[in-house]
Amino acid sequence: MGYRVREFQETPNPSAVKVVLEGPIPPLEGRGGSPRSYRSAESAASDPLAARLFRVTGVENVLISTDWLTVGKKPEAAWKSVKSAVEKALAEAE
Image (cartoon, rainbow, N blue to C red):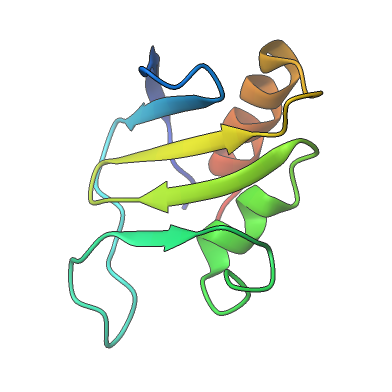
């Protein structure tokens, strides 16, 4: 399946970026279309997309909505490598 990134948008938080996608993100079963917010890989374990994003080195938190998501990075992580790895992780998502 995979997701295609339309663009990365800066946010007021320099440690977070909004990722706008080409198409919708299906809701999790039993959660409807409500946003999904995770602050750790452990809390995201039951969400396949969020769990995949937490496997990206430097990702600290994730917020998933219907056609965009926000990724927060650890202070020591470089945006260039995080964005590249997030884009690859999304493209390979099931």
